[in-house]
Length: 162
Image (tube, rainbow, N blue to C red; front, side, top):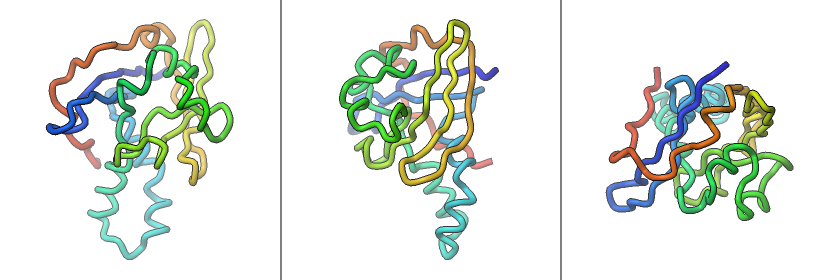
């Protein structure tokens, strides 16, 4: 069973609106997304340097804006605010990361969230234009009360590329 951690950080030094960052077993969710989609991107962009591909893979997503989420406990348990629920695709998927451009709908990372009395499982991760990948089950208790206020003064460094 995995361990999940939620944190808030500012979008940039100019835009202080915090976004939700997510770590699974101490690894940024953006790294998991990069790992899961690396081969697809290499196949689609064979003429792009490996350095540029890695930069894109790591920076393709960013956290969802704190003010847009509404109730993070509900959102990350699969009951997102109306603006997220109305545009979810495929049906039943919840965005957990958004596009790094700042418009979450542009390139969201979606997941299907299943809740039981003991666990929460995020599965069938996908970007609307890509195939599904992976799942992360964890004990439900840590997710019941994600932090409501920003507590990270700086944006996390770009995730390591291995």
